[in-house]
Length: 466
Image 1 (tube, rainbow, N blue to C red):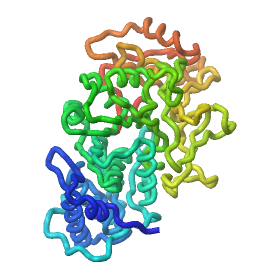
Image 2: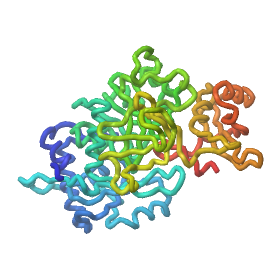
Image 3: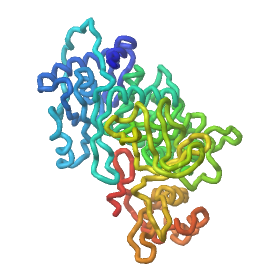
Image 4: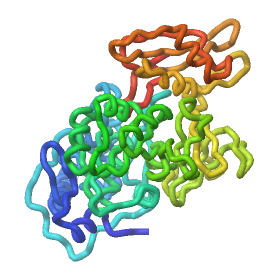
């Protein structure tokens, strides 16, 4: 099935509306469309054609958006490259491309507009993105135009959509959480506010003064904003937060500061969001409202629930009885899932553990591969990390299993204290014992003066902890 090209449609409907706002300037949809059409000609001069893979090694901003949309108009496959990769890591991506864009396409007179509107084939590959590589080497994932369209529709149903939307992206555009903001904004004909990287002061200023209505965050960036004093941003209606477990204690801090959080769970293979909490239902302090209320027994002990599945997305737990809570691997199906990522049974096997509660909300426990088996008992690192990070003197924590002759694997915690504080390990053990079963309490604690290793999108790099 073919649909009118998103950028062409947006330029025709809202030509003077701001498509992209960056610290270096802003472009209207008409300007972006003309720049992208000029870019098509430049790509063709470089040897790109429909179906060719174009590696985009440009910083987030106007030039990146021009190159991305030029690829989409041409029908070439965009392959965003993370500029923070080492030369060898970058080469593994760019060597597979037909064309490498390491310089902007430039500006010039766009070709005359044709009477025939450009189209997108929903079954065709639009973008190749690479997974974040938290536990293994990054893998390429082919996402279609249909994946992005259904993702945008599902997100709009879950979060609502305002024609005056200004969605702030300070996530890498080489990962699905960031790139999806550019794609959704073009589909909606709304504004994407793009920062090259996350800077706490710059993002906080934008939230206070630049009429931002939605921002995409991860737990670490949300914590940094709250630590920096962010409170009651005037235009913000949704801080979409995911990319990994979000401690309930952090969620409570956000609501106390008047930051409206919507929790989300997704991955590259599901084209970003798979589940999201409705904005009004994500507060832990709404007794009696029912929908979205955080179970008091879970507060401060496990990552908060990531909400119900998006529109036309199906989620089930492998091995669990339908309609009854039970923990197992999270499986996803639906039109947002990358076609090559489904197994023979038609489902995306995520490798993540979780459960669906009686209201159909997803609770994410952590990675299946990260599970620690200690004395024959399964321990989810994310659950223990959430408890540790609920301690007022803990800035961040990581939990892993270390080989142990008695336990098989000993639960081990790496803890970073808040600046200017000193942790008492005996008191920290007692804090864990008040909440966790004995076999989940870390046997050993390691204090670190350095921040824990994370990807640019804020995910913990567990493979660098071992």
